[in-house]
Amino acid sequence: MEPLTDKELKRIKEMDRIIGRNLPLIREEVSRDEAHKRITPLKESYKLENLDSIKEDPITIYHIGKGFTIFRLNIVWKRIYGTAWESEDQLKAFIHFKKEAKRQDHMSLSQVPDLFSIQNDAGGGLVFSHPRGVIVRHVMKDLWKKIHIECGYDMLYTPHVAKLSTDELPYRILVYKRKPYSYHEFPIRVAE
Image 1 (tube, rainbow, N blue to C red):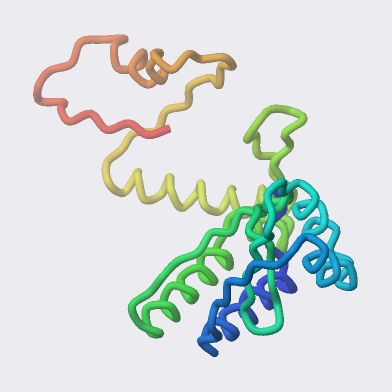
Image 2 (cartoon, helix red, strand yellow):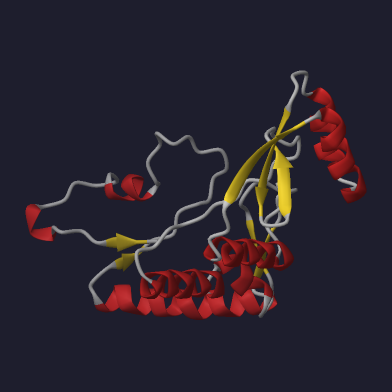
């Protein structure tokens, strides 16, 4: 399903404006011929299709202002997610939060400076670092190592093995199990 476009969102805002006018909802029963006369000039194929599928007579039409519809559902559906807020301030805070989340989204952040890409052809979620991304990763890794060494951690490096099942532990535990330790040596801090 495609996300809503700005054009469609403007139409939703227009609907909100129409709702604010408090136009009356009018129910009207008309003959099948009268319904055809009203719908045909509008060139609304779904309304005509719905009209033809209704077996009973008279046909119920609902009006809001100049627009009207037949009391049937259309074939085309579009899912719209919405929120409701008690105040304009809460709505503005929510909109600001969503804009910030979009601005800080790691997928869009990776594309602007060309840091990395996710190649689903190689495997779902696998990250491929681009040249700038490698530099950023290197700087972050150096900082991470520096902080851990300053905090008393020893550095380890274990092999990367494909197809590890989720019940298997990281290989750091194998390094720990290689010899007995005295309680004086605890806590043992290792980082990888």
